[in-house]
Each structure stands twice: as structure tokens, then as C-alpha cells.
Image (cartoon, rainbow, N blue to C red; front, side):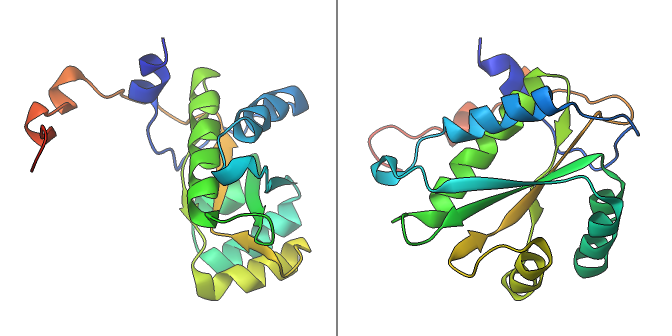
Length: 164
């Protein structure tokens, strides 16, 4: 049932020093590639980052330790020439990847890449100008226990019928 990885998914910012296999990454990226995109444009591509030197350079730009310490980062990028809804396409892709990683016992977090840093990150990763980068996805085994959402976190008061 899909609700299980949804309730289990939490932001993870501390990771074990354990490798993530290529097949695990392929499963996560497969989930991202199967995400819906506006007009079925399939404009999202992925840069996988494992190199400690590149992760250190990203840490210097983005100033969050998990960027440097996580086993692998995935940069979902989008060809702006193909997409009519770029932020939405990247967001849905990222969420699919989050849920797949969670179902595999892995942790993730949305690492926002501010617009002012995006061009520097793209240059570091060799991403062409026409591509949009809004986030990175750290992927690793969570350090410590992850407490899933519970029924107490659900609020029926936030549901409105017909009108607000």
C-alpha cells in the first residue's frame, strides 16, 4: 500500500557511512523517470555525485554538512526547452524518488539550491545553461531511528468540501 512509504518518509540529514549500490540508485531514478510531467515531456535528467572532492565543493557552496557527508547525491535537472511546467515537473520527480528511497529503507531530504547558487552548482557539475536545477537529493542510510508519521499527525480540520 502506498500510504506506508508516505507515512514513513521523513527528512534525513544524518547518514551512515554505507555505500549505495548502482542498482539501488537505478531503482530510485526509475521512480523519478516514471513521474508524470506536463504534456509527458520527459525532460528530467539526473546527475549522480559520489566523488568526495565534488561533494566538498558543493558543501563550500551550500554550507550544509550532509551534502558533504552523504554517500551519494542526485541532482535532478530539467531541460527548459522541453518543459512547460519546470518546477512542477522537478517536484513530482523528486517526490517519487523520495518515496522509492523510503520504501528501500533509505533516507533523503530536499536540499534546496537557491537561484543565486544554482549557476555555480551547474558549472561545477558541467550542466548546460538550458537546464534548471532547483534541488539536490542526498541518499543514504539514515543515522538513528526515523519515527514515521502517525494518525495523530492527520487533521481532518484541513479538509474543506465545496468551499473553504
